[in-house]
Image (cartoon, one colour):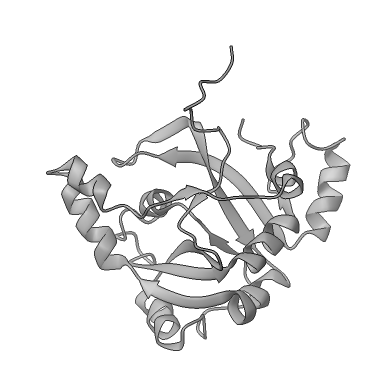
Length: 206
């Protein structure tokens, strides 16, 4: 059966973006988030030598952080990156799990994994009430190696603390779903070149 023309593609990057930047989300403790907001990028105690995951989906960040309530994730940041940097990350990525539909064999995947400073995976997108949507996936992007200093020093243009925004939307979900939905960021399909779209199309969770 053909997919309805108005259906959301199973794998599609949806984000808040403009001509120059794209927004992603991360959640941290106040000890990391506070200095980062003050500096306009990540500074110690943020570590450059650990993998860090970025998420273009506000609702997936809400799910991951429990609406900014989980330990170590009580401050939610909206991080604006250059689109050039974001697309570099996608171009230099590898799926986080072996997928026989996308790799010739497991050894080829492991070789790509060793050479790639970026991991990607596609997880079920969340509804307003944080229920998984099995037929709609949201991309998560893990930065490691050379990608982390590029992210911190070259790609980030500004940071916003959106913890209060997230908490207010959460409160509205309990009383007025339509009002809560109207407060969500205006995420829309992100335009990708055919080469990048093909590179990230396969999902280890299909």
